[in-house]
Image 1 (tube, one colour):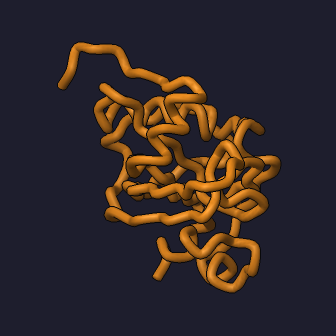
Image 2 (image 1 turned 45 degrees about the vertical axis):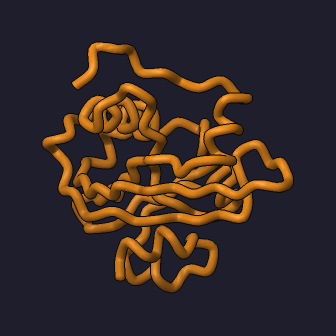
Image 3 (image 1 turned 180 degrees about the vertical axis):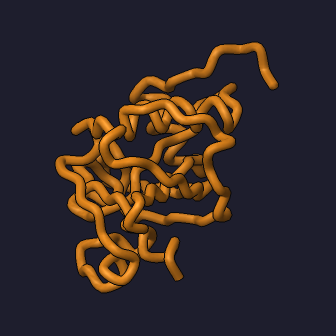
Length: 156
């Protein structure tokens, strides 16, 4: 564990990292008491205009447990402890686009997928990364055309 503070990169530095290295993220497979999956309609690249699970990047100097707490707070409106999640595995996501919508470089994520069960009433879903949210059954996730293939991969 590091004693240094997590570093959130500025726009220019993040572009350089995305151009030259993979990003490590935590994806949240959020289920409710009906075993439905929470998906958000992404506002930003990559995967803009697709339904995707919530998640976020791990910052430099940020341990996974702290990142998990921060990401659940930012993406779900409630802070959750890492111990409340079930680790599902490591997934790779390769996108032809990037967050800056600039030509000439792609995005590579190494996603650490975690499942959490949650009461819908406890969520305070922000509109930062997703313009709307919905709950879908696993079968519906697989069938729905606008659910991103990387989200579908979590249920195969």
